[in-house]
Image (cartoon, rainbow over the protein chains, first blue to last red):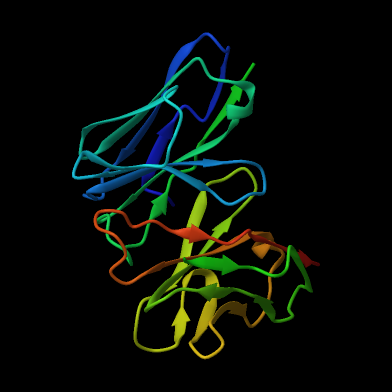
Length: 114
Length: 117
């Protein structure tokens, strides 16, 4: 079972709403990630945090705003989203943000933008 | 540039038969290779990885994969398929020394495994 916990599991929001996705891990990992996944497609990297600092932003639109309050928590703040942003959002963590480290994924948050 | 290819969109196999899900990669330098499985409406689960050492890697749920440097392949195998193995399988790669604080995985397009009873 995954040790990366994501809430909520499902979220429906209007295009003018502000909402947040939350992620928590207690494995002592110092790297955390947000991925976006469309149905039957591979995950696409959005953000990487290393030691609570943003180290990669894959040119994600500013309507997605990540936050890492501490080494165990990762949030994704959502505002003024578009219907095409509807997807599965996966949080993940790894011991370090160094190649070769295994990335462990949560179960995801299903987002529907109406 | 790094890339991963999974040449089969779908693999069909009868329960009890051996299964193979193919993956080839393109990386300059030493590759780190991963397999993940995604069951319907779930997140990705880590199965196994190759970093260095023995070319045959054993992982979760009876799966194994063989690293073949000359063929740049990392095929996933299981001796006897179960219906419960039916899922979407992703191969992924990054490389030794890539970037700084990045650990950016490059995923293949995925292979849907269907095991018939």
